[in-house]
Length: 406
Image 1 (cartoon, rainbow, N blue to C red):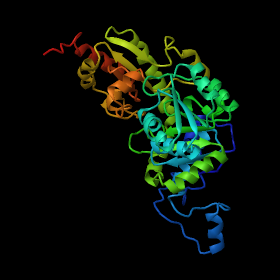
Image 2: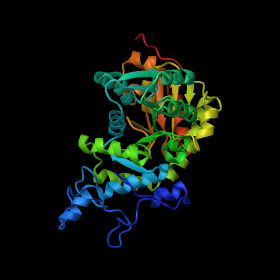
Image 3: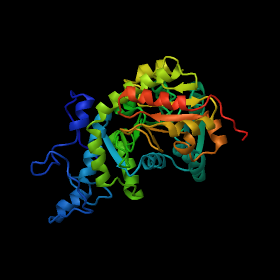
């Protein structure tokens, strides 16, 4: 677990993306953080070794617990989220599941929303109940309903905003204050927003979670997850992960660090492109609906403006004609990977049935308000006009209607 502090609070997030965490771990004049693959770290002085093992002195003992390369990654994210501490994981889902199992015990109660990422939803629907943990899954847009469930008592309120894949936005300040009045911890998945666009800790959240695989890394070549928050809470999650063992590997940490140096530039481009594309799609006759919090037509636009500095690089849209139209449209795209990922430098597109909510049945997706004709479109850093042209030619290539009877 990283405990360092980037004490100079003046640099912007862009500068922090480049410099935070780096310096003392650079070796022999190197300008880049080294990849330390060593499993263990040796000490000739047994007393010094013991003090490091107890956390009384800085150092590393075993890379399942801490590692120099991984520590720099943790410090960079910690600095961007302006947290006291951070701990990393092998994947985003490891971060999410570890946080929940750290703070929930049999007989406890957790309140969450229906519109979480599909894998997260599976934890709430199938795994926590096996441990006699009561789960209340609320309608995402019903803030009053969420507050009523919290008022009944809970240990954890788990939120995600913007949501995956329908880009709903929660009023974090309001819900966090409600949870704290009942003594509950609030965990917020900030993956879609990134720390460039939103800082839930500033709004009162106790812990913020990222799938680092997505926007933080940005190159679709490394898996990882990270949790940021207070020293005390992060230490508790670290203690669980230390034994559970879902450790971020040094090479993955290095790749994530490399990607994060351009995070602010990528997010700036993706914010601008996504908003331009969303506005254009809204006017297209073959589009049923566009989901993007940066649109004034979005039901949560005002809330998004209040708590976000940018609206993110992911939008979703549904085609008139449903899944048959999706099957026809997606292969026509030239500048998009059809894959189950997001947040990359390349545009990535796909339906929730094969990406965010592949674990769910069609009935479960419908119950979550996810149309089968929905496409999640994660905007890359390509030129905006090229993406618009690509979408236009792909939409023009599909028929007005598809005959499903043949």
